Structure formats: structure tokens, C-alpha cells
Image 1: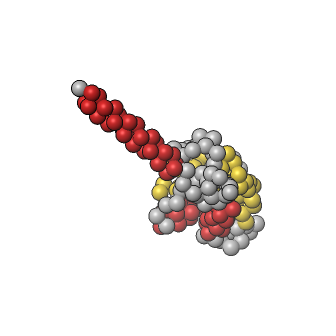
Image 2 (image 1 turned 90 degrees about the vertical axis):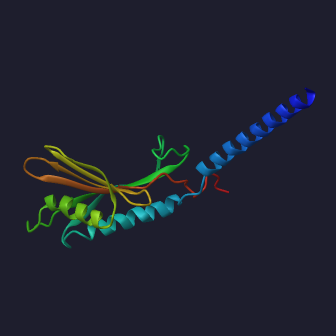
Image 3 (image 1 turned 180 degrees about the vertical axis):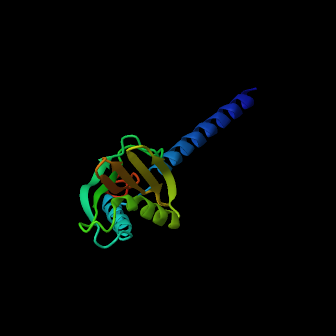
Length: 173
């Protein structure tokens, strides 16, 4: 009976150790390195330049927002808190000649992003707002939002990065 009790205690101790190790490994997995915030910012800029390059040469993209470090307070990827993400947003200005309309941004860029194989996240067309969001294979999101103002359209094109550690790891050392 005593041997049996010792065996049960040893099995229980082994299970506790295994579960503890599994928990630690799970945490380590969640704390995997990411791109740095500087790398994410460069990728955002590249994605937006690539998108704007699909529009006519005389179209202007006026930067409205450029932030490299917003907190990932509620990460959608199930990862740990403490990470950040970057975001870019540009307003599209049509050429003064009137030869092209900003209403062409959505069909042009949606076709381009589909051709690149980006996953469509949102394709909503409301009365005064059209939203189109895609995601790249590496977790970056790009979007187009078009507002019908009655006498004109406002169009924004933007991107956001996935959650990253500022220096690529949770511990900057």
C-alpha cells in the first residue's frame, strides 16, 4: 500500500511538472519575436506606396495619419499585451483636370489587392460609406473608405500593422 501511495505521489508530481512545463512553453510561444516597430513602419509605407502606384500618376495621396506605436490593448491575435501596432492613412486627391474620379479608387485597389491574393476582411457598401478591408499573409491590413458627401467624395486609403514588440522581443535587452 505504501509503495502504491509513493507511486501515486510520483505520478502526480510528474504530471504537475509536465503541466508546468507545458504552461511555460505556451507562454514562451506567445512571447515569440516579431518584427520591430521600425520594420513594421517600413512595411506599412511600402504597402501604401504600392497601392497609390496603382492610381493615375496625377493623383495625390495626402498623408492624414502616420503613427508607429499605438498600444495593442485588445489584440485580436490572442497574443500578450504590451505590444504595439502602426497605422497609416492618406486622403486621395483627384487631379485638378477632372479626368479621373476618386470613385475609381475602390474598384482599382480592390482588384489589385485581390490579384495579390490578399484576404478580404470587409466589403461593405452603404448609402454614404463604402468600406473595403483586406489582410496580407503576414497580418497587415489595408483599407479603402469612400464617403459620398453629396457634391463630392472623400476617399481614404490606409494600412495597419499586426501587433509587434517595439524592439522585436518582449525584453529589449
